[in-house]
Amino acid sequence: MAHFFRADTRHSLTALPDPDLVVPSEDPLDAVAMYQITQATSATFTDLYLRLTFLFFIESGSKRVITPTQDVIGEEGDLLIFPAGSMVTMENRPVLDREYRAIGVAFPEPIVSQVFAPKTAVTEPGHVEILRASRHAPLELLSLLRATLDDPTLPGVIREHRLLEPLVWLRAHGSHLSPSTEEAPLARVRRLIETDLSHPWRAEEVAGALAMSEATMRRWLRRSDQSFAKILMNTRLEHGLNLLQTTDQPISAIALDCGFKTPSHFAEAFRRRFAIAPKQIRTVIDA
Image (cartoon, rainbow, N blue to C red):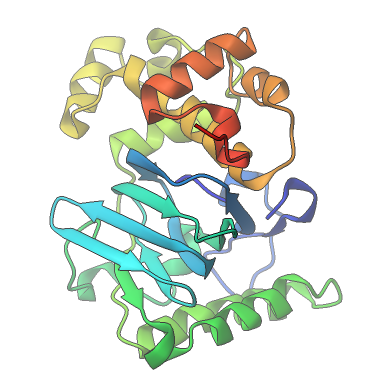
């Protein structure tokens, strides 16, 4: 969910609670990142979890998003805004002889919370917003982000401040992002798993890392209607989906990177989860 620039062109930036203080990031999961997303075959992905705030700028094709309260379709040039902690179903649709293409930008909560205060947010959790190309011209915002992330000469403090500008732009255009005041159980477990997806994680080990008993953790996870086994599998498979969409890595390497023993094991689990073969994400296969 999640999703993004080819691996060798990924941009990242330290996320700072205080924009006047520059501290080197020790956690790559807390970086602002931009990704190029491509998909050759139309497919629907159910119950994708987006741990961070995500912006999706659609370059070609369209994206349908379904939540318990919404069913929206973004077209070429539109911007879709997903608050942190969103659980959504997405359908990416290529058009004619062109792949589905989008730019995804992830913002960590310390940056989002500098612009959007939790107490003033008015939308329900998980509410996806859309800014239409015809009315808001969101690609201007994308140009601003690219200019900031592509300039290696910017001092850290200046770069940090400039990364707040797109969020201020969103607020001025009516966006109501709601930063989390407390990381949800699902997010905390997935965040830990994401530090090393190839590691053979066990529930007892994860519970210990979160300073609780295994029984307490399992009760805690029920608040998100998730089991530990399901969270582990979904985290691995969704990361695999992201790599298929955003990198040229061989599927065999992606399988190992995601913690699967063999590419066939990964392909089987991927097909069960998403009803599509991994290679179909990158290549149109004639029936």
